Structure formats: structure tokens, C-alpha cells
Length: 119
Image (cartoon, rainbow, N blue to C red):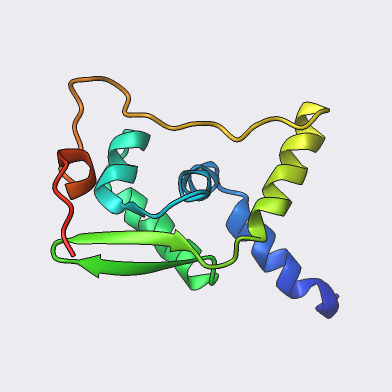
């Protein structure tokens, strides 16, 4: 069913819970890899692997600033799909989840969290 191949590939990318969480983190702003790692409580290599899949699908793009790599969504229409899926599962429209650092002892070394922004 060739006409559906591209749509099928998109849904394969969106099927992974960590990739969905990453997209939600990027809903309103860019985030650095270290910040996403701290919010997810996952290893950096794992988060980077999921970001690579999203990047290859054309959903996110990265920007380097010194040692930090920041990601943002390039196809914001993906949120229409995510919101519709959330509505179907929940039976009513729900707000996207909010991500915070898991505990005060966890810290993120990014300039944003340390209050030192670079240009």
C-alpha cells in the first residue's frame, strides 16, 4: 500500500514513549540534551539516540552552542497529531504533560539551568 508508506513511517517514529516525551518537552521552546536527560532521568546516550530518530524523520533540528546541543521542533503540526491521539485515548482533550527535574538533588549543567546564557 504505497500511498500510506510515508504516513506509516511517521507513526513508527511516534510510537516510542521517550520520543513522545521529548516532543512534548520541545512543544514551546528549544531544550539542550543535558536538560532533557535530567528531566527524563535517562542516560545521555539513550536520549541522543531518540533525538537522532526524530532528527532523521525531519521533526527536530539541532543547534550547537559551545559544548551544548539544543533541539527544537521543525514540524509543529506534529502537535496536532499528538493532541488528537491524547484526546482519543483520554476521551477528552487533555493538556500536554509538564516536565520537571525529578528531584532537587538532580541538576542540569546547561547554561539555562545555571543561569548563564551564552550567545
